[in-house]
Image 1 (cartoon, rainbow, N blue to C red):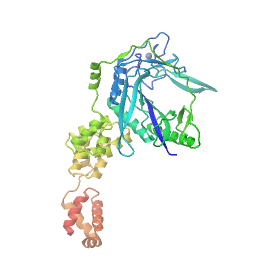
Image 2: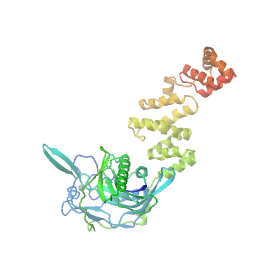
Image 3: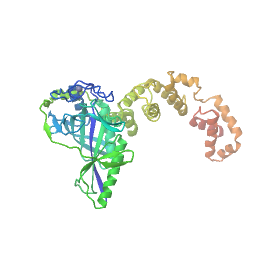
Image 4: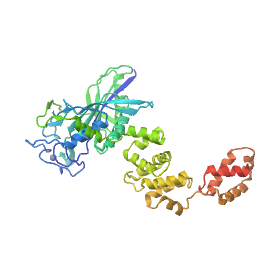
Length: 475
Ligand SMILES: [Zn+2]
């Protein structure tokens, strides 16, 4: 039988607030273990949580970036479970009344069509402590680091709208883009500031039933999410084909062996309303203030770039995918360079070079005005594209202007000059056979002669001009 995968995601995103969610301890992942703690986030008896307004603002902004409706009232519950990473015995989370619902993100599906993937709800939650397992001599020990305890999270729960590993990966990439635009979280799966769990089940293709799902955790990159889902689809297909039943449980992704393995269940208790954190009431006025902080989002920016600057959809997508890339592009084209040429060179040259050098576009020494003045020379055919590619790399090494680099390296294109005329005369003299072929109408001969001329001038002319001159001479 042919099966169709049904996939939903639960994504935890750590908000980049200055403090934790219920105390004033710094919210800095990666600090020395247990450096950022106080009686509240060590969960000492009697400590009263103080809800952070910054966490509420950033959580709300995140929900708006994901097209959610904000609930006017929400509240915290105690999610009861017992585990060494949670000595107080419960986690503050929103179970009965969440912050937001009914969001969505559009992705471009594998068939090239736009596909809307729905978000069921987004709720706020405090993070738990982190267990570190080590050995001391022969003894295996577990240590608890409370730096993360109480860190502000939002959990994004999607509808089971995804049908392939591709859909899930595109959703996560898109989610990251949207959230980075509003700058409320870093969203790095590698750094642990975004964590995604996947719920996967199979059903006969064409059916609309929902079967028993299996949850997969422990993926540390978007790519690993795709790999883990693909593996789980394969595992469940084999099981069903062998006539076996799928049992509800949680599995861990093992990135080294590329398999999922069953995980021992944690005891999960009830969710009861928390009496210490007041109910959260959001007024229209407060919400409209937060709404005003939304920047132009990637989709709007992409449409504007296509409409105002004539970029293709692909060019506009690259220029709007990261907010800082869009800012760079718009600064560069203020220098009167063609927007399409600029987008093409940012996409094909600048971004790969930055990646190779591990530099951020907002911090690079290749400022937009320098990059644009190089592109102006390309546009005026003062230098060839080949020479310009060389200069892009040199711009990183020095703070000289592109014009100066071009002059120092003698990269200016040889125009319609005597120098070029005599070069061509010399080449025609050296290759009488090619000249004869050209005259008898064989067009490859022209290509050969232009190639020779390009080599002769060390690439400092352009083939179009050479062809024109050649035809004048032989025509
Ligand atoms: Zn604290």
